[in-house]
Length: 249
Image (tube, rainbow, N blue to C red; front, side):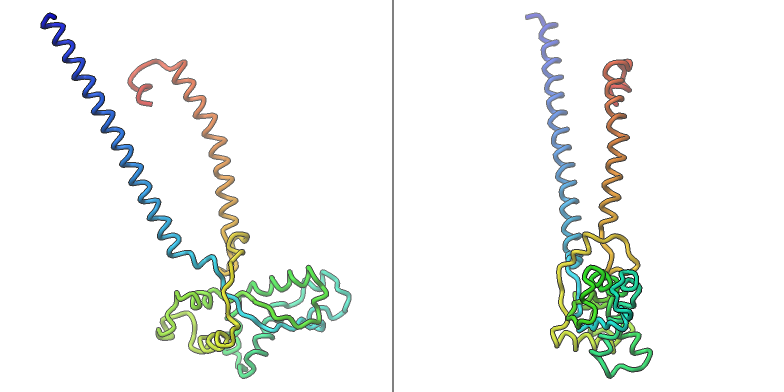
């Protein structure tokens, strides 16, 4: 074999070896990128679940609620329009006043009523509209607690902290502890977290609107990117001139 042919063979072998090294390095870099991405994703889910798992539970306060016909349906005709206009939040407040009869001053009553979510009245309204025969009954209901009470029960608020350092007053804390001692405070699965949308009241809000928005955003993205990507691939493969730019793309 001539020296020229031998030199060509050696250069070809060196080129193949360099190509294999580059492919191996590229694969290692890709594997490293995947591992780093998976690590960040795992850390993200760890912190997300570790900090947010309590959102799957919601605090409720059990009250004996009197659905007085004089307040809800004074005409006694069970007219849905009349039933829908009743002050159901006031009915729940009356149940709180009956539970704590010693609370009489306006400021104390305001703090007492703040233990229950403003959205609890809407839920009671929905129950009565779906079953008008509830009017006139005294029901033992679990009403949704305010978000500050919820945070306290879940341990995200320090009970031993000074009153100025927490959103629950000492007076409210005493009422909550009385309710806990009576077994009137419970945590239940928060189905509303998956079925509700935005709300001014944090305890009544959920992720449903975000899920729907994300779904439609993906549809729009797919509708725009898929035909554009296919058309670009066809152009580059069939019509574009062959040069370094098309190879790079």
